[in-house]
Length: 260
Image (tube, rainbow, N blue to C red; front, top):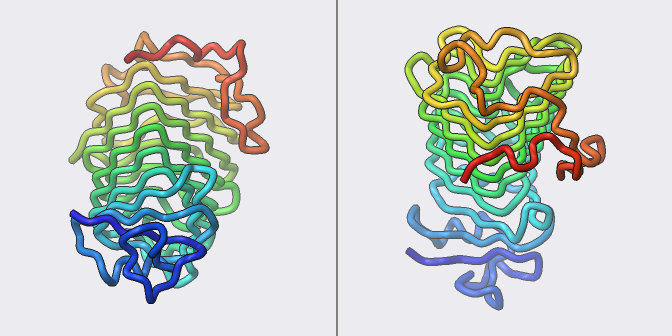
């Protein structure tokens, strides 16, 4: 397993094996790497297609930003992504950003602006310490994970804006398991939202904060048909979500309610 580097000051004529000899593009790094290798991406904004079997590590959630080009297809490869921000506008086409893939996300900010139907579709996805900012106000089916196998969500924030659809976190997952803990779901919607729907199979749901600006509908499809006794069902009190500050205010009811 080798490491390769991509930098705004690099060149694709370099071998990419150090920051001093970094490639200029991820395509350049992909061309010399193999599926078991890791590609480190430097600070800056990148418009590149990275739907390849690799491990991608950025320089920080607010330092490395990747915006897939308009020709991008859904990510169908086995992929691991850490320490960067992904912006999906009208770029990705298809049923989901992660589509029939196996994905690991660590410390990733996904800005999802109505580009397709779902964040993931029929995929296996594990997300730790991630922020999902979803704007489905003009398009979308109001779902986050659809038909998604073996979803594990830990210590994440989902901030969702939707006006055209009732909102559901997990749907059509009768063939899989959804596990979520220590996470916050905030839905700004003109209607109530459903945490789960249809044949969702939740293996675990605990120590989460659920809040809808117009209320929460049935929790029928959660484990035992109800929210966990460890859940918080009120406004988490972000500092300034309208401007992207999802830190918790000192008076937040969510502070101290999680578990190790």
